[in-house]
Length: 194
Image (cartoon, rainbow, N blue to C red):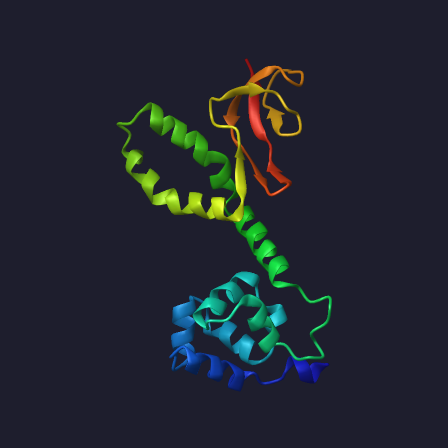
């Protein structure tokens, strides 16, 4: 088993690099935006110890899918049915990314609302810069629960009361939006009774 981990995958990487016109490991490192240490891990067959986002950065630069990258840099004895599929690796990456941008997810809609109410704020120019992040969330299937200031029927499954009490169906006002990813609730919208 230790032989499989220390197997040299340099020829495999050299072949992929040649196919896309990359002449050195340093150039690959720069183009993929990953450290040379990560490239060395890949060459040594330590792909299972690499973070998913590193693999997702390398795959398109080498013009291969994530699953093909994992397959090419894993020994046959190390690959089993328990190895992560491309879909599960992508889902793991998305979850990790969502955790990273959690503060933005929770605070950005409130900031947008404040900016919309006062268009003279210099922050007005910043909104357009964040459109790609909104598109990324849409692409991943992340759906907002409510809009800041929106009045809607209280649903304890999707809303969290910031103060007071409300019965299901009673009108509440959204203070902070919530988020759902597919069928999974990420964050309840924080609401207040009216």
